[in-house]
Amino acid sequence: MYEFELHKIMHAELLRRSDLRRLADEARRSRRVARRSGRQEPGRTVSSGGVRDRFTPAA
Image (tube, rainbow, N blue to C red; front, top):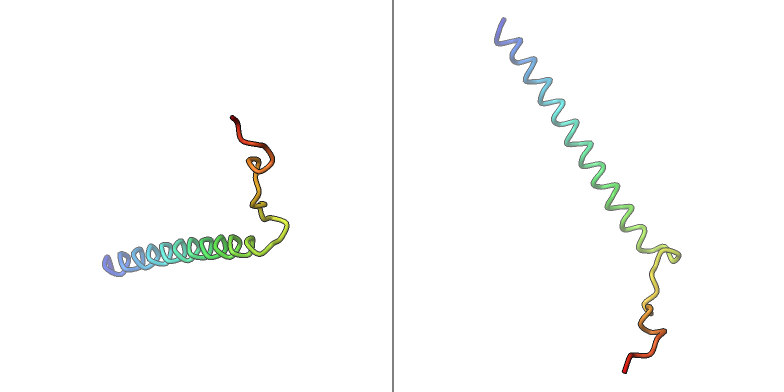
């Protein structure tokens, strides 16, 4: 009986760990997709010409 209870506890712990791992993987995947989709949005790009192009160099 003791072994069966220990088995149930270990089984529940493994299920909990796998759920946490699955959730972390899903969050990582969604961040990656959001980061990649942000690259194609034209409104979010930074212009290549910066502040340095607007001013003449100092003497």
